[in-house]
Structures are given as C-alpha cells and as structure tokens.
Length: 93
Image (cartoon, rainbow, N blue to C red; front, side):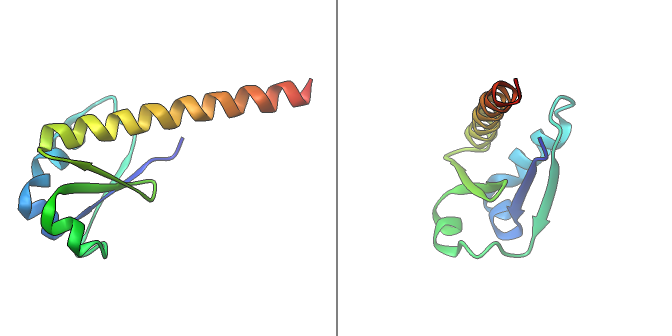
C-alpha cells in the first residue's frame, strides 16, 4: 500500500513537528512524508494538530495522539485492503 503523509509547515510550528519526527524515526513505517507550506485547512490548522494521510485528515490533541491516530488510520486502511484482496481472489476462483 502506497502511503503519503502530508504536513502543513504552520501546523508543524504549532506542535505536529514532534509527530513528524516520531514518524520519520519509525523503522516499521513505510510512508512518504511530505511537508508543504500550506494544505488549505487553515481553520483546522489553527485549532488542532493534523496531517493528511492518503488525502484524509487525521487529527490529534498532542503529537503522541496524532502519531497514534495516524497509525490506527493506516491499520484500518490495511484491513480494508486485505478484505478487498480476498474478495478479488474469490472472484478470480
């Protein structure tokens, strides 16, 4: 599964930098992590820590919670993918 995690530079300054650093240091995480000047979610950016994960907004009240929520989101995506793969396999039989 291709994973892209995007961060807004302003939100990084508000505290999500610690989340980005933790994700970058995670040897098990296979993701492209990108920093942009702005992701166009200014009202959200002003009130909470967030990242875009494969185009979906994931939030957290702290850097640790943001990392946990990103990992939970990715686990759910993997589960969905596994279910789809099983369905496709059944159709091929």
